Amino acid sequence: MKKHVALLIALTTCSLSFIPPKDQWISLFDGKTLKGWKVGKNADTFSVEDGCIKVAGPVAHLFYEGSEQPFKNFEFQAKVKTTPGSNSGIYFHTAYQEDGWPAKGYEVQVNNSHTDWKRTGSLYNIQDVKEVYVKDNEWYTEQITVQDKHVVIKINDKTVVDYTEPANAERPTDMKQRLISSGTFALQGHDPKSVVYFKDIKVRKLAD
Image (cartoon, rainbow, N blue to C red; front, top):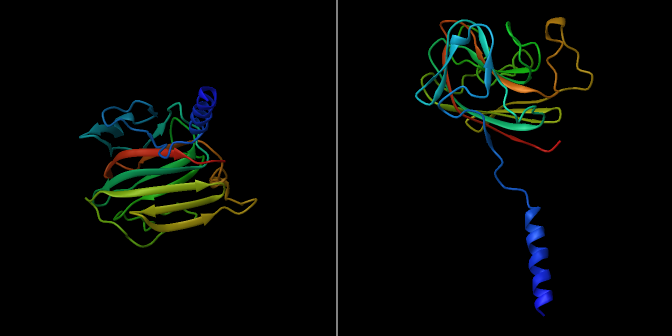
């Protein structure tokens, strides 16, 4: 009898060990430093202030370079706060580059009142959003979900973009790498007048 009980316990333990955890979120920002992130030109555009990544300065991009990358299928979330007239963006499936606008991957817009009409949540130059769903100086949640060729962007849980990249998608020469692939994330510093804040930046990988 004892042998049977021991075997049952062993089998139960093994079975439980294969149950995937319910919450697999990975924090990308520790709230104190830019550890795990890398920026090339104009590094002073990014700083940490009051537990947030503050973006304020000349054009620059902050790339996540932690050991969890690359990311292919995922759910990404960040809390974002814009200020009047500011512009920024969140890139995915991108790759580090020293200078210039990231050539690889897609940009998800952060812009509630800048002169550029493409507003927060736009899959920039692919499926753009004209409506303004959130206000400057207020925190909101920006969520990006990528599953295979399917991209869903939500602002405060409201879906604003639902896009499926077509097979053999054709892009202009200056956007030839704006395609679903895999890579990392980047935050954009757009111009010296754009002040934007990010916090609670996290991601969880989805099955391929």
